[in-house]
Length: 348
Image (cartoon, rainbow, N blue to C red; front, side, top):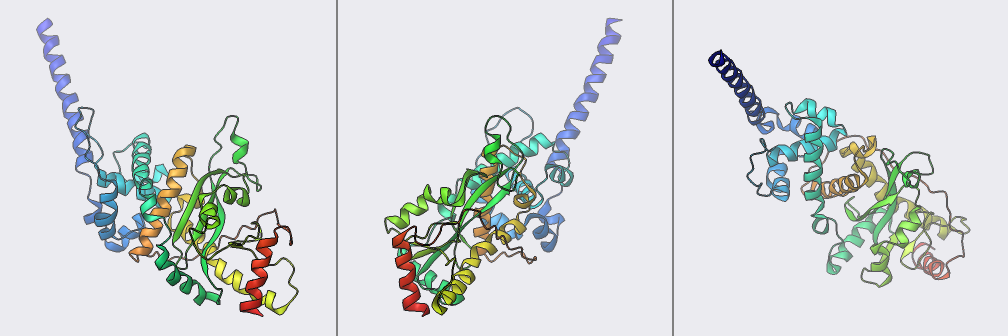
């Protein structure tokens, strides 16, 4: 009797072993997306050409994984691709459907890990050019509408998130009554991101974020030359120029027109960023800390796409969210003096 039970147990164990090995082999033998998809299909799914993913992005996130006995780890390449797929879809369910054999919890952990590795490169890929290269960038800005000495255009955009819950939840509810992170970005003339701040709740105003950013300190200390352009939600400062609320002269009108056309770069930037990575427009259901890392990672990938001319040919959506708080004329004298000086010398 005992011998029969042993035989039955051993047979059952052999079946479990076969199932286990089949399951492990299923993940290992998953179709190689580099071979399975054409170049067009690959770029539509993952937002980059194959060569950029293989030669640029993969080295950024690749680390030697420790050898363990805890199941079969997801290869770094597959982890990178499912992370890019999540950025392009905003849905863990879609990622799980595309890459069968991976649970949603596994995908979530892999996306978080790869996102943090990408975000660690922010100082390399999100930065102003060297001071000797800034005059060339200012020249590129001036070709837009002849606005002089522009070093960047600054604005904020709201990235929708799920309610974080707890006592701080209402801090993330913005003036339009949905939960968000208010992200400040500075755009260059070619829609590259020169600076980004991704940590403030949606209820915080654009000017509050700027006042506490390192960007303000760099211009205030004159570490960066030239001017920033901002909308009426910012104070008018000697290094941050805003439009006139009440136009009185033809020079002021021409100044406003040039200001709007030049500052349009940052609004177009937000449109391109959200079109390329729909997870930012559809909303993030991840933890607050992970959401902030995802925003920075997408900004890095956006700059890489510009550097390597890996452009997405899709319709553009302008992100122009005019804030409620308006700084009235005359409240900051030095800024108004500088603005009037520019009008007199360049637009009268």
